[in-house]
Image (cartoon, rainbow, N blue to C red; front, side):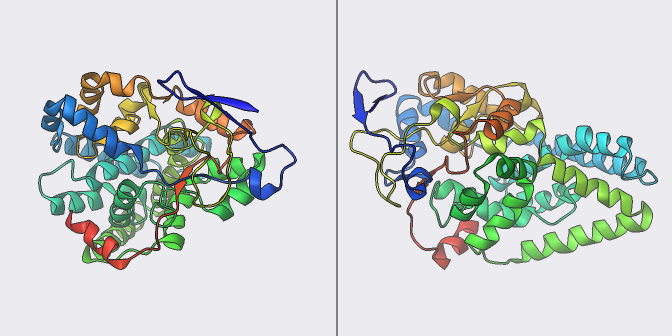
Length: 370
């Protein structure tokens, strides 16, 4: 028997976790819940106590200048490496240190743009995201926005939140070798998984994204050579691989280490035992790597207020400190990758899921109008 204590409460509950020799379908399962996601409720409480938080909403115009500088840096490095061997240490180190760090920043700039946080008009954000997409090498920005909006609107929904690993992924990859493969190739999972789970409407923005990226790649090959495009693609792969900044992919929503609690009831879609508190499903990181990633580590704050730009998230946390200080935090993105791979209790099953409903077309189509 195990005792679980509620956070911020003196009450404890005694539960019976499944034995180690229980059937695999009992031991291996997600944290299923019928409870609503916590961010809406916390947002309401914060706004009731601190209505001035509303003034933090809005776009951050200076972000575009940083993005332009990063795109320029990537183009310059691609030009510098145009005659270098792609198997050389110089090529790899520049792709890892400069390229991956820069492209991770561009991934997350596109994340800011998906919330319309660089320009006042949504269309301007979409078009600038296509520009930010250039060093990534493949068209990505137009598809990211609707999928990411689904992640916010339907957090944990097994049909609509494509950030969640599938049952197949969890079964196959919840071992040391599988976790190494997952951590090394995260970028492919995030790029390909959505297409197998939820379909989105193809729009003129998607077409423009594809045309613009193909045009830039063609010009790069013509004037710089194909190695420059390889630099872009290698930078993107490494940005979503075993790179310090890539730790945020796992850190944001996986239930790791001491935050794990025994999964008592394993029936898909059912609540866990009465009086039993699910682990937190979003985690913030307040370390120095936020300087390179537009404060994406402030992830509870971001999910609570997705229309506050990255420069104002620390101020949100300062104002509403009593709401955020008690929440479990991630102390190291590098550590997250290591703990995820090496600790047996950390697997792809460690996500909170909701049963949700089958995807309906109107939900997807209406996202672009918000």
